[in-house]
Image (cartoon, rainbow, N blue to C red):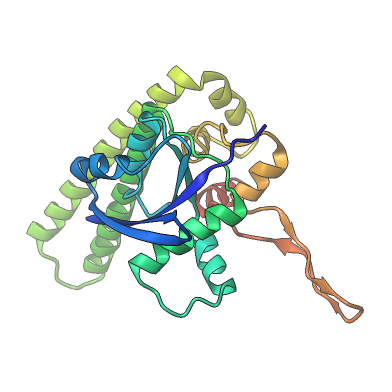
Length: 266
């Protein structure tokens, strides 16, 4: 039998988080610092019948979510777009941290979202490496374009060109080193998946590695429909009545980075 929770809304930001707890027919508002001191103060208000619902606000929710789960408190993490649409459906006019926390709690009470499970440490490490590699690649591309622009000039500063070449070389070395470490971790925890993905035509080592990292080793899905929905490649039918019969396209509501990888591979 599914456990019945008392849902607590948490609106989280970089420095603080606002909490809405329903009691005696009204929501009570609390505000805490987004650090260990705030977490310890917050958990004094909770018990095992509570489920804390929060948005996936960048990396800011992770420390609190980890802390609560480690203390035996249920957590649900929701896509911010879902909460925004829920608020619009309720015709919410005011937007404050206090109101947002209460609306998140209302969403939990109404929709009873699935519980969040914290990812393994190595998965978080891989995601950090992936994000850093993407940033290094952007920096490398920017420097190469700057170099090409300078090369088109009739006069070139040799000091600038040497500096650009040196920076590009250093970035490439860093990329090779971090990607090597990522492959080592993936071979340690997902060797079979890594080999299977590489066996698919069009998917190479980097693409296979990226797919495993971004999907958490494909641990979030129990069937192919869930995977296609997560990636955003499930079909979106556009038909209404007898006159509207649009062309079906993929919905694109999902993990855009995986779609980008698959598009390049295809």
